[in-house]
Length: 135
Length: 388
Image (tube, rainbow over the protein chains, first blue to last red):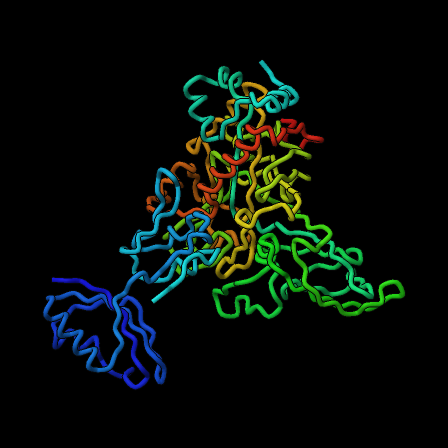
């Protein structure tokens, strides 16, 4: 069993493909949609967490690539500008996964991006624009 | 044994003064008691770094040729309107001012990407600021339009002047409605699913001198990375509030108006902020040295987060309607633990004020005093509440 997070970008012509459904039906993969932005006639972005057997995952990825979708692993999605961060802690209260946490000894805000879901709540909450989204 | 500020200054000049931060004072008093601590320690430094909307700056700019009378005219700095109700070349900019084309809250929550606070930060960073002004023309000031670049090097004067900063204690904000709300205390989730607070607690200047015994008008302070002064009590300064037995206010109480030379300040210590759905503001750094003139000041400066209570207020329905209904009180120790309990519900907490930066301010001030570069001041006049 593996769990992977991917960013799927699809051109306007493929927006109508029910890819998540196919991944479950034909490749036995469990999915969790972390973020989706799909508008007719525009490029769509889907951030998926996929869970399943390693071989199933590989065949599922082949299926997506054959369709012509652009797939990248989700890495360093939310980033922090260390110079802008004042370590106030406002982001800590909105972060649902504790990816942003106060270090009890230094009171500084630590960002563990492996726990980040890319929900973007911290981006809205941060008053200095220190948090940003990068794919 | 009481000490005078003159005696402490003599020690500072000789680099013999014992200076500690308000955090360090806690363990000194715990270990040695207030009497010994008062004899040993000369100065306790404090610090706070949080959003303070009642902040702004005034500028005197080099005149155009022909001259223009900005007073009574219109003036923009990077498209942010500045106030022109003074003389020909003086303008005032508040940190919450927004550009005229800012969409504000038309699409809620608004982003408020650039406002007066950001202009102030850019100015302090040495960036060029576009000034655009229009006036009506007089015999002595015939100019009607002026477009120029102002920056830290070419203005005659730039002064940070904040009518209300360094609030002594503050509310804890929660939201009891069933919708997300966007406030000056940050985004508050529905049904009290988070709480925000804004004070450095045990390091906060006025919580270490709760009855304003050493802090007064004229006191020299750390402001924006340089030296500044207390100009006046802050607007809304209210010393007549419920207090703990150690005189620490249980609700927002005192405040300070502060002033300093903006040209000498540092951009890392004056940061323009965008509060989602609320507006633009400025994060201001303030540090105040507290002379340990007697045992009472040693006791006051040993205040801990466990001793300071903050009131929990509903920003969803009570606060907007002008109701000051306290839902409960929690200590800063509880708030800083990351979770508080209100009506048997456990709520995640978050701070708007930066504690690590408050520590850095108190440490900087300590360093300046230790090097003999910063002398303490006797207040020129007291602020209300000190007579208690």
